[in-house]
Image 1 (tube, rainbow, N blue to C red):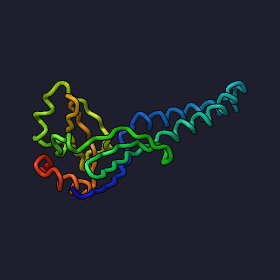
Image 2 (image 1 turned 180 degrees about the vertical axis):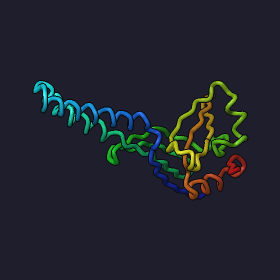
Image 3 (image 1 turned 90 degrees about the horizontal axis):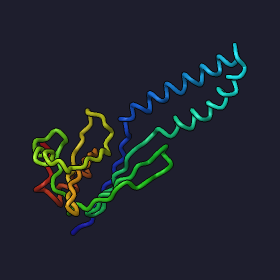
Length: 167
């Protein structure tokens, strides 16, 4: 079998709670500093302590997923703050049951299975082409949501044409 390679990096856009946390932390820090400076000096040092806490918390909210397809192995990792990389999962394409767009009816038979576990490694943006990959290993059924590049889709389709759909 020929060697195939594809790499995709996807920014995670579904972190709504992180954006809300950023607004709340900024508002609380500003309120503590302002109230402490104008009225009660006790609150000012608390506000000063909140500045690095807020900065550290907000800085760690940036995430992107990295897919690496080498031969018949798909490795998925998360990169936090463009500096820390952590491997999340590794899948063998020999165990791939189906690959189709998320809204495809080809996946209906798998979605009716109550033991299906879903892992979302996509950006969460509905305007992007999000694909569902169904893997069956050790009697466990897993659905992986990814955003493959055209090159990655081509590589998977080349080796597993009968189970890759693009409705």
